[in-house]
Each structure stands twice: as structure tokens, then as C-alpha cells.
Amino acid sequence: MSFFHGIKTSQEATSVTTPVEAGCSIPFVVGTAPVQAVGGKTNKIVLAYSYQEAVTAIGYSDDWDKYTLCEMIYSHFKLYAMSPIIVVNVLDPTKHKESISATDVAVTEGIAKLPLEAIASTIVVKADKSSNAAKIDEDYYLVYDIANGVLNVEINKNGTLKEKETINVTYEAVKPSLVTTKEIIGGYNVATGVTSGLELVDNCYTETGIIPDLILAPNFSKNSEVAAIMKSKATTINGLFKAKALIDVDSSENGVNIYSKALEWKNSNNITDSAEILCWPMVTLGGKKYHMSVALAGVMAQTDSANDDVPSESPSNKSLQSDGLCLSNGTEVSLNLTQANYLNSCGIITAINFNGGFKIWGNTTAAYPNNTDVKDYFINVSRMFEWTEKNFILSFWNKIDKSITRRLIETIVDSFNIYLNGLTSTEKILGGRIECRSDENSITDLMGGKVKFHTYLTPPSPAQEIENVFEYDTSYIESALGLE
Image 1 (cartoon, one colour):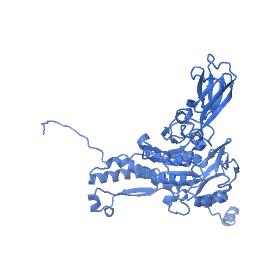
Image 2 (tube, rainbow, N blue to C red):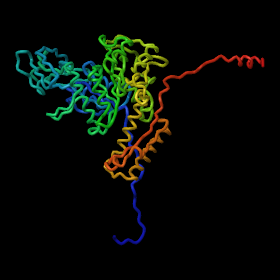
Image 3 (cartoon, rainbow, N blue to C red):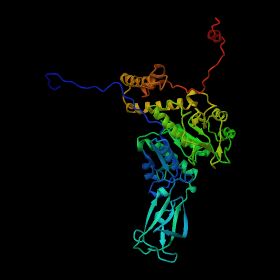
């Protein structure tokens, strides 16, 4: 030991760990986008914090039937002003395409307009069908105009196409209708090592540092196989975390075109799990149609944001950006309170125009009414359990492989109890505690490196039914008239 004469100090690591708070209402959305217009990627995770960031990465079009991710981008950023979102485009311009034979295209004010679907790298421009191909960047320029949904062929005034009233164009165009549920589901290719589609949700944390807790596939989730995979991924992300799959009932003429058919559709498609939130019908606003799942994601994000980014409150009875309800073909749907409550009794979320405009209506996951465990069927209670579990994992992950000592156990217990007490004081939960019980930790388990904690948690249930009994009291007659 070295010689020392005087006073010195040192610091010890704090015995109470500050818990990490996980984000909530972060959507992971799989679908199609016009990536050909921006050089975007296929089957790559894109994290976007703004509308412009999302459009720059994957493009944009108002044709949401073709490009399903654009609906989510517009709704979440423009209508609900929430962020971030994580999107995965599965449209592959090298695969999902068709050939467009030589076509004469009119030139107006030096510009010929092609559809947004045109793939720039495949375009061949001629003065006429029998001419030699003109040269790009010499005779013409190609500029995607995303705002107007076209690809402009801009004629160089000094090139061989100058003063032409028409040009002859041959090209290949993306064909989004070629995207199937197989691409949405995706998977892992052992031969190439490529992960695709919904399977990419497991890569979100390592690539972005964010764990999404809402999984969507607008227009595709009505397919029972897609819905089943969404549920599977929501049940266990990275084998650790849980999420909610927001699924739409098929609202086409061949699906559910009247509210009374919704329960049969739900049961026949086996959508009955607590990891699933089922929605019907679609939402309209300003002539645009939105899937209810997309609108619900926005309302959930707004509700959580208003509650300090804690999913403690149900999205039900919260304002919806909507001026009506409809089927997928645009046919108007009108629901009264009795009909909406019937859907709720089937474990289906809907919307209703009652006392203050259109609002989300329904508190339960798809597990209801088959599963009556409050932890599973109330959306906010279930999400609070999942969110608190996520916080525990992230907060104490750095304790993995530490020696099992009394100090380790006390640090985890004390830290998490302080955290739970904080949630209780702000009424995000009614109460909670964590224990490390001797009856749940055998000597052999502790010797084998296993230590178990037990957390008790009580999130508040939504006030789904409020009753007030009114009674006529004759005693007020006597007192009011002075007859006592």
C-alpha cells in the first residue's frame, strides 16, 4: 500500500438505479411506398420523426390503395401530429413491375408527364418510334414530381428533342398490385441472410434503439394469415417485449358490410387474442378514406402523450379526426350508440359521432369476451403491464451476469419500488410493488444463476359504465312549502 498523509475521498456507485422509461405508441408499419421516386429501399427499417423525413426516405403518393404506407405517413404526421414512426416498404421496383410498350406522350411547355410508377432507370425516349434513342441529361432530364404524382421528362431546348410536340417513350413501371401477403409477412432467408416484412420488427431495437409497441399493416391486416403473423410478432419482440397488433376487419362488400356481421368475421378469422386490437369500419375525412387501425394509432399516441407518455388511459371516447365512417368502397356507414356498443361487446373497436364529434369507441382487446381477465381485455390495463415489463427489462439489463448478491437484489427491489411509487403518486397506477420472495427462489435456482422477482401491479380500469340512480324525494315538497 502506498504511503498517504492527509484527507481523501472516493465515490461509490449509487445503490438505487434510475429506471429507463420506454417510449410508447410507436408504430411499426409494413406496406408499400413509391420508393422508385426517391431511390428508397426495400425491406429496410426507416425511422422517421417528421413528414418530410418519411417522404424523403420512401416517397409519397395520395393513391393509398397502391401505396399503403403513405396513408400512415399522412395520418400520423399531418392529422395527429405525432412522431416517430417506423416503416418498412416491401415494394421492390426490380420485381414488382410491368413493361409499358412504346407510347407517344404529349409535350406541353417543354415537359412530358409520365405516371409516378415509371422507373426512371428503364426509360427510353425517342423523337418518334423509328428514331434513335435520345440521350438523358443531354436531350432530356428526368425529375420526379412527388407533389403532383408524376415523372417529368423535361426537354432540353438545345437537344435533339427541341420543339417536339410529342415524344415516344418506352419504360417499366412499378405495379404495387403484385405485392402479396407473402411479402408483407416476410421472414428470414437463410441463403441470403436477408430479413423482410413483419419479421423486421425484431431488428428495430438494434438498428434504431427504439422498441415499437404498435404493429400495423394497413389494407393487408384484414387477411387472416397476415393478422396471425402480426399477433405472433406482437406477442414477443426479440423474445422479450410485447406490443399490440392493430387489425382491420375486412370492410369490403365481400367482408363485413354491416355491423352485425363483424362478430362472425372475427371468430372465423380467429382474431381473439389480447395482443390484437380489432377495428371496424373505415374513417373518412375531407374525401379521404382511412383504415380505422391507422386512425386508432394516432389517437393512442395522442392519448399517451397527454399522459406523460404513459399508456395508462384508454383511447376510447377520445377525439377522432373524422367526418364520417365508411366501407372500403366509400359507402357511408352510420352507427348509433346501441350498434357501437354491440361491436364493443364483441371485442371490436369502432367510432361514433355522439356528444362532441366523432370519437374512438371501445376499451377492449380482441380477447374480449372470451377472456375476462382484466389484465388481458382492457386495452390500457394490458398496455400498462407490457410497458412496465419493458421498462423493467431495459432498466436492469446491465445487471445481467452480475454476481447474485444481497446488494444486487436490494438494488433492483429498491429501484423499481421507487419507480412504481412514482407511477402511483401520479395515478398512472393505483399501486404496485416488487418483491424477491424466498418461496420463489430455490437454492438450486440461485446456484444455477437464476433469480426471480415478483411485481404486483394495479393499473386503473376505464370508467366504462357510470350509473346514477335518480329518485323523487317528497320531503323537499314539505321543506320548500314550509309545511313542516
